[in-house]
Amino acid sequence: MNVYSLFLALALDVVSGFEYGPQYSTNFITDLDHTREGKAHRNELFLGFQESSSMWFYTTLAPMLWDTVARWYGIGEKSAKSQQWIWDKFQEALKPLQQGIIGSSTNDNTIVSPVGNVLSTMYDEKIGKGPISQTQFREIASEIADHVIAGHETTGITLTYICWELSRPCNRHWQDKLFEECKTVPSDLQRLDQMPILHSIVQEACRLHSAIPGSEPRYVPQEGPKFEATLRDKHGTRVEIPPGTIVSCQPWSLHLLETPFGANPRQFNPARWLRDETTGETEQEYEKRLTKMNNSMFTFGQGNRMCLGMNLALMEMKYCIAQLYSRYTTDISPEWCNKVYQQQTDSLMGTSGRGRATSIKGTDVDMMRMADTYTTRPLMNECWLEFSSRD
Ligand code: HEM
Image (cartoon, rainbow, N blue to C red):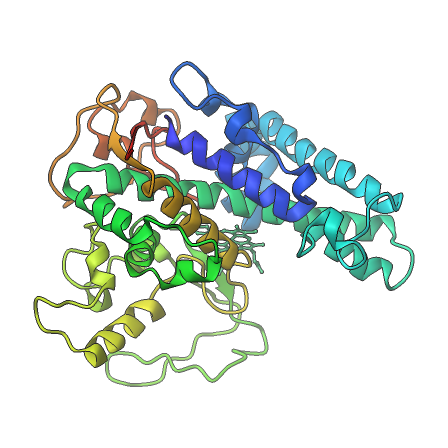
């Protein structure tokens, strides 16, 4: 299976159901063939989203150049198709709400879903205040488009890296630990958060392979920082950042710091999230170390613009990984490329420029280098794993 296309499909199925309602969710997991025979990885919709997300720099920081650059790379048409798909899906799911055929989230829970969905919730909120204008409809559509785009590639990419790392010979023993812990996948989703091995694996993948490794820029407002700045230079003097300055921080750099993440930060090592029994680390020391690591995690951003879908993504990923590894083992497909047996010591990032990436043929570590864009992905857009049943 090409798990990269499989997990993009899963994530789009989940987020579309969450946003539009389960009856409008896509079913790309089964509708597309993710094996070698199928060409799911060449699916136009996914490619359109991928091309659009490679343009985030222009979308956010240089919108006046978007058209020119999109034409240059031939992105405009593909991206327009995925935008149209989102708009059509919105119209399709909106119609029954407008016609009152199905109830919205608050007045007919059984038909829509027990918790409602984003569209019906937003529709309810607006309709409660009077007739909805065209602009307001576009606002709802735009918000939902944001979630669908932000929610599927990121989740799909992270799941891909989790399974690839677990399938590498040097990490494969984590599959057995996971199996022991997940033998009975809890139906109570809250229990998923009480599974330390599962949690440590997801955390480690989020640290090392943040789906958004790129900078998260913020402006210092003209009226000055809205909070008491505590930034100090090495002499302890308070540093003032002038209004209008763009300040940015990137998960990629932050997550590779030895303080607080410990030795060999380029290696996938879920154990760094667990209490170190070999050194006799006390519970108190462990809690202290964990707090420092958690505070330095930037996978979902931090502050008031941080990821809106973090809890959905974490729950979805944990559930998926628990389901998979309680039933299967995975290995890197020998038909794909040569395996690297030892741990990672060099760069995890691939800077190849557009088009040049396709000329790289090497080991799984080469193929799985993270494309250095704002939202990353495996450099070769694929990850071929073999599944074997545990039965
Ligand atoms: C592993 C999965 C995910 C990762 C790594 C991720 C990461 C991020 C990051 C880094 C940001 C920017 C934060 C900032 O600017 O400080 C963000 C924003 C956002 N994410 Fe996610 N995300 C994921 C899943 C999701 C899902 C499933 C959804 C929707 C259901 C979602 C919706 C959003 C939205 C709407 C924003 C913009 C929030 C705002 O600007 O106020 N994300 N995400």
